[in-house]
Length: 153
Image (cartoon, rainbow, N blue to C red; front, side):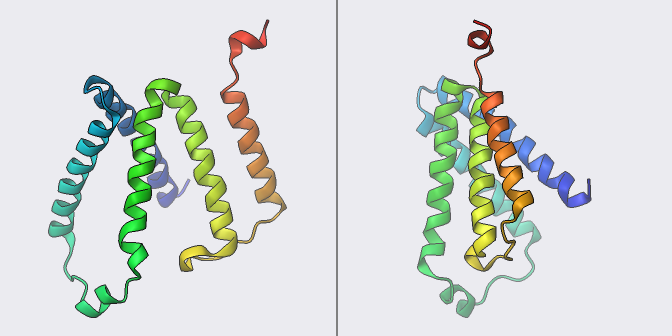
């Protein structure tokens, strides 16, 4: 596993841990939306601090004006929706089931996005190996979420 793969693995692990913790925050505060709001507020403070400490050059006004309007809002709206659903569903489904479905959704949409090169990203055409991988992924999610108490009778 290369350096970037290791970082991606750590990112995934961090998401599973933070989602579990923030879902519990929402349970204790009796509102997944309050938990989500607190998580985003802390994330915003942390991100702005990191940006201020690490950014040497900020975008010029021309760069800012060239960004399509949908890019200013859609990503944040999708992020809030996804994270809010995580914090709502984890206490109901369990973190393992929630993450297996969520990661499946991420991977399957990523395969389609890569195939078509959405958002000017590199095109990675869907081939037989990737299709078999997607089928294996779906099969794995089904197996992970089988109720073993009902399988044996």
